[in-house]
Length: 611
Image (cartoon, rainbow, N blue to C red):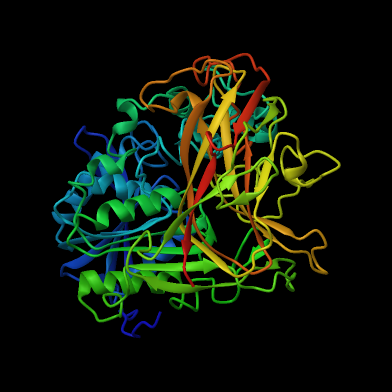
């Protein structure tokens, strides 16, 4: 992208009003810092556009303050607010569910202040993005623009908290990390000392947790919301609140210029695309999408995991001078009317991965390559959605299976789950996010000697194409349809899309690069609102989406889909008993079967983009 050099210049000093206690509609007061543009030591007595970030991560943290000063020096009042129940704010912390009304009330308070010109832009990453989505679902009159970075739930039940019925265990990792800096820990050194001894490695062996018997027992706010998320397996009214299901509120969602951005290996990739698609169809104001080859919030690097995408992959120096410069362009455009080039940008900006030589670079990462591309819509209008069928021989092919009744049965033992090797992760989970060769190794949780390829496990079914005779681009949403049966009353099926890179001197076995994955809890095959257990041995059809991706499979590579029943600790492990979720005490092995024949043609639908 080519942007103008027109920017707000750093012409102001900064004065900070600390810990202004702003009352919410229920009387709870939230601690708020206000950064005011200043000249000669005195705040400028005129209204300015305002930038707001609401956060559970301490408004006084160094990075938060540095960003606020950066924007304030360029002619913005900046407001930082601790979320309810966090740090200096009053009230109880209940993750996600208070942010809609609190955000609305904060924006309305800002509009009443003498230093506000009545316009407010919001920014924030991860939870700071969720606060924006929750707020936008209430349509505050003075909200003017948003940069929603790596978050804002389209539907937290479908992905990012629960996931097609399963539970994303990064949520418990986040709770453990934040409990250590909670008010309870700050107030009681005994609680703080206990929490410092807690490790994920140990407590991941004691799932599911129970009230009063969990590592969060001394921080009841955190234990309560975790157990609530974990045990609410049905898609009920709890999951349909503004802070958890933005898609149910798109019609009243603020119609303001907004940027939804993330990375292919982010935990919120699916929700970012869903928000863009849902909102861009019905809003008059510009709705934009930016997707890089990054893990959660890591937009200033060129790699994800063990794979490097080349010098153009980072935001810094390519799309802007740096992240603050990029956001300044956005806010200068919509709050100050400056001609930065943002208005002229195409609605969709994607980094398409692939095209590199596959060798190890000087930093020890596989050179996968890639580049930026502007598009007008999502999915891309020229996409050819193509079914690739699973064959008994392990072939993945556009040709449908013929004859017979071939199927593959494997033993899924919940006491020996398939370990997570990269993917879309965040929240401090003990496994690394990003792209990795799909072979077990000692530094990944759950891997065991002799550290062989995941596809060699008997409970992983790998289906792959022959070596490609020409480049194939797969960019868009990916869906899987499986015909399955099981000896269990309930079980899971997982799918993972892999780019099988051929061997070279640096990677003698090749590099089997994970692109995207997902899971389906079979009790929700017909309805997420009402669970239905299976009849052992009966054949069922299940459909579920993987996260979108954008990758060029080079000539000589193979396209592979791995099917199994676990991906731990990315997702919780199904005990196969059919008991209420999050409350089981037993685990049973299950014989799980994938059918792949002319009658039961299991397949993956790939979004093929013509050259």
